[in-house]
Image (cartoon, rainbow, N blue to C red):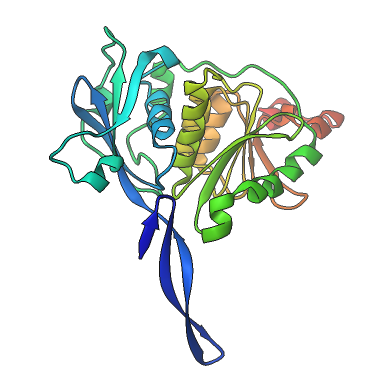
Length: 289
């Protein structure tokens, strides 16, 4: 196998109708990324990710975890320059230098934890941690029509360049309320893709994302809603099911959570009032909560 950042070439053998043939294929590259904080020389995360937008991934992760709260908190992001580290592996280590005088609360990150590409920061965060951080409830509005929601998955897939080549990648994208694609990031882990998306917005001073719809491939987990809450996203959509804790986060922090978005159908788990067609019907308070 030969790797070129986000894609890796590999020889595969295809069995079809009793015949075997070989061909070249593209796989999604998966490599570890270590995020270090300077000047503390402390590793705060090791996550399996698809190389690309590594600085945005690190920035988005630190923002989502409450280590930084604004663009100015980050003085510099760079790859490792340690001569003791193998040259190729230096691009799997990112150093984030914080602004002078910033002493973040590293207690939540005290243990050196390992994050798989599938599950996010398992067991680290909780709904109570979000409450203690003082994340604000997202205010009502704006609203969107069902037709715009229906259109989002096709637009996401059409823009997924690496997925088209490999077939093995998650994506997270932001859209405006007219359904126009604003930004997209891909990664082997959907939580990494969202961190890259949020990190891009942080580094370009575009947070909060309170006029955006976020669509993620796969399911909506707690991590997806945690990150969306910190970024101020009012509507989160996924093509699969949300978890129970994801619904709890969305309900508590005023997010419209949509799942099973496929074709001209989707489920609304919280925040029904942001979907225009729902305004034509009458619901009791329990249904609209």
